[in-house]
Amino acid sequence: MKDINWEEMWRETQCHVNPSEPSEHSEIERYDCIAPLFKEWMTIDDYPLKVLESIQLEPDWSVLDIGCGTGALSIPIAKKVRSVTGIDFSAKMLEIIRSDAERQSVTNLQTKYASWDDVCTGVDIEPHDVVIMSRALSRTMNLSETLQKINQVATRYAYVTAWGGGERRINKEIMTTLGLEYRNSPDYIYVFNILAQMGIQPNVKHLRCSSRVTYHDISQALQSYQLLYRLNPGQIEVVQSILEKNLVQCENGLLLAPDDKPVWSLIWWEKPTQ
Image (cartoon, rainbow, N blue to C red):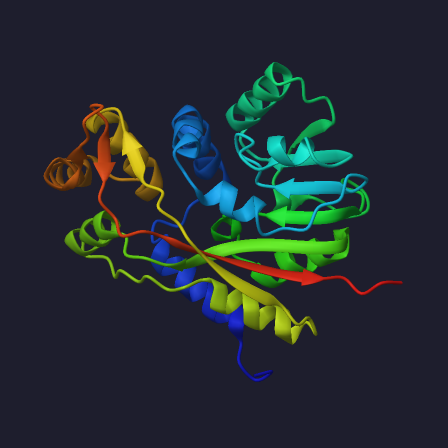
């Protein structure tokens, strides 16, 4: 297993999943844009509850939530532990989490505007009892460094979630129609094996979720995919046609992306006691 370059394989896979070579600036723009919509998704997503049911927490512990988004994990966790630090590179996401924390009288949650790639452990972020990186690994091309930094800052437990499976039907049709190679690789395989090469014995639990992605209208859906793939004017017209054909209107008027139920893989490890 040590002869296999899992890091190189990870980068190759991510280049196929994100063929438009996203820059940090474009990623920030995308997440800032979808922040209000992302919060709506979290209200109908059973993923946060499944994660919360699977992690170890104690009242006197501190928790670091990397890629905290709008606070679907950070806020409920803050009600159970001593303190929570949420990191995200989207200012709009952090605006929402701070507003919701204040509205719910959560006072032990602090936020940090930063990309985890740029954070220096021990300088920008102090050790925390528990570190969580939830559905944020696809933003990094250096998976080994990301996992090493998580391991450095966690003192008791580290939890990471990665794509575990499920068909992204619309993404597949968009990429194949645009002449791009579509791959739907279970990302947790790379996480597991890189951790093993680091000398860590990780645990894996597959979370089968019933969450769905919805939009208020075609233009909102198109904007989301446009930012994801950085479409040119000709491609925008093609993608709009695909969305109009595939999105399903729900009884509440929202447009639903009819993908198969996603599986997110929770990978975790316990730090050895000193």
